[in-house]
Length: 59
Image (cartoon, rainbow, N blue to C red; front, side):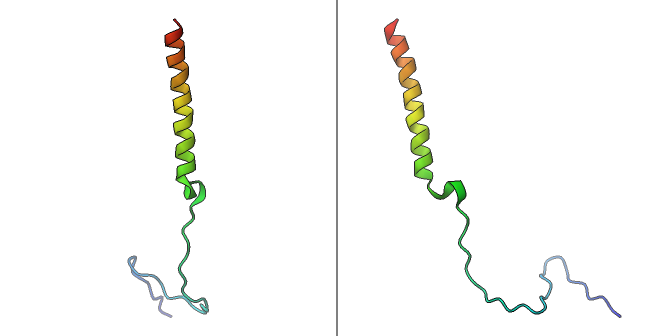
């Protein structure tokens, strides 16, 4: 009995596969809406900077 080896660059043949090829949607996860995350970061940094500016002007 011979063992047919598949080279590392090739995909081995699949037995009994009945699935059709389909395009999968990439998983966006937390990066699905980056505008929301970026706007939250910008708003917090502006608020933080305003605290320092207010403190400096009150001296």
